[in-house]
Length: 356
Figure (cartoon, helix red, strand yellow):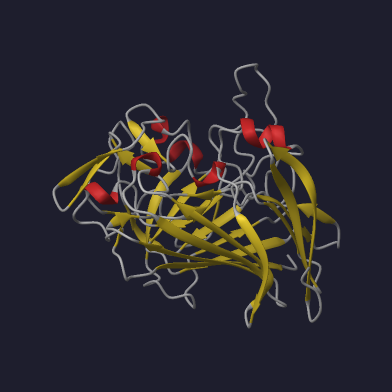
C-alpha cells in the first residue's frame, strides 16, 4: 500500500457481494486528516478532522455496514453517474437519435438510474502525484448501461494533500457520442452529529436555475438578488430553510442548482461551509459551472420499516456538477462527450479551523 512522505493508505475487508470483495480504504495525511472509502460506489464512509479543541469526529454521514449501504436510498457519500441530478422523463436526444433511461424518481431519471455508478464495484490502485496521495478508482460503463449510449471508461482520483485538501479528479472517455455529468454526493456535518441548522454557508453564485413542479429546470436563469438564495455573503442556514423558492417541492429547505461565478477556475472559491460550534470550516473549489446545494431535507423520514438513522437537515450536500436536465436545455452548458475527447472535472474540499 501507499506510504511515505506525508500520506499513508491502508485497506481492510468490508464484506462481499456475490464473489466480489468489498474493501475499505483509509488515507491519512501528516496533519491528521483521515479519509475512508469503499470500492462499492466509491463511497466516502468517513472524513475525520479535529475541532478547535482538538477532538476528532466524522464530518460526513455514513453507515457502519455494507448491508446498510446496499439498502441506502440517499446516495450517501457516493460517486454519481453517468448523469448526476435529474433528466426530464428519462429521455434525451443526440444528433436526432432518442435515448430512454429508467425513471427512478417519478417521471424523472435521477443520478444515473436504478444501477448507477453508486452501485458499481470500482477497480482500485494506490496513486500519488504532486498534489497528494491516495487512491485511483476505475470502471468501464458498457454501451446501453442504464440506456446511455457508448462504452465509457472512467477514472476518479481521491487524493489527500499535506495541507488538508481532498482533491477529487474525474476523467472519462467514450467510443461514441454520449452525455456525462459526474459528482460526489457526501453529506457534510461539521459538528459530527445532530442537525446543521447552526452551520453558516456562503456560495459564490449570483444566479440559479428555477424548476417546475416536477423539479425540472424551466430553462431560465434567475438572479439570487433580494432572495433567500443569495448566499454571496455568509449566512446561518437555519434562518433560511423555510423561505427558499420551491421549498415545498424539496421537503422544506434548499435543493437548488447554483450557477457559479467562479468561471471554472480552481483558484476561485465556490462555497464555504462553517460551524461556529466546532470551528471547522470547509471551502469548496471546482472546475464545474454548477453547485447543487442540498440541505438533507429528506433525511430522518425513515425507510419502509420506519427506521431512521439520521435527523432532518443532518447533512449538507455541495455537489459540483453541470446543470440538471442539461441534455434537454439548449441554454445550459453542454454535457456532450465525443470520441477522442476527454471529460475532466476537478473538485477540492479544503479543511481548516477558525479560532472563533
